[in-house]
Image (cartoon, rainbow, N blue to C red; front, side, top):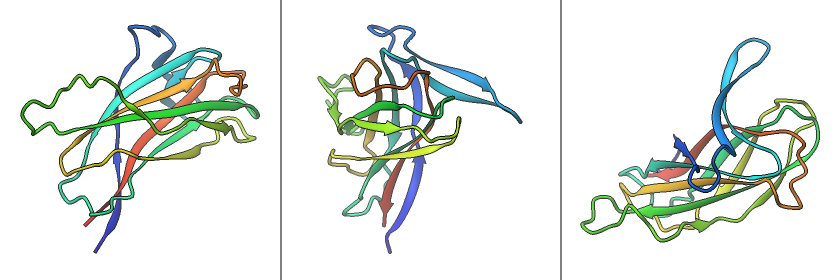
Length: 167
């Protein structure tokens, strides 16, 4: 029997070497509570790196997707997001934790909901071949200086997870 599960992606580090300050983790004071978000500054590129472990019981056809929950303190505008990834066999001798590159899934132009802070789930289909116990490296890329990105405020990333079929 195949079951679909959702595994949180451990988003740990903003891209600081070349894009210092363009993405950062910070709480936002909302009506009923303070909630923490990854912030991507408007009009500039920003990146956040994370990782997720592929389950031992991965299905033969895993139908893997990376899903993001984004929002903004805005009622209109488009934010441009891409997800890059690389599967690393951490149990294999000689597998580098310093890959030469990550594979782009393909940028999406995402129209924010018409109500400020409304959540929007966006899906990116994983193109990497995955195996049990691989470490999937994930980079979320806000292409804020792209002509299609018209959002006048910071893009907020609330959640990121891997949706995958297991047997």
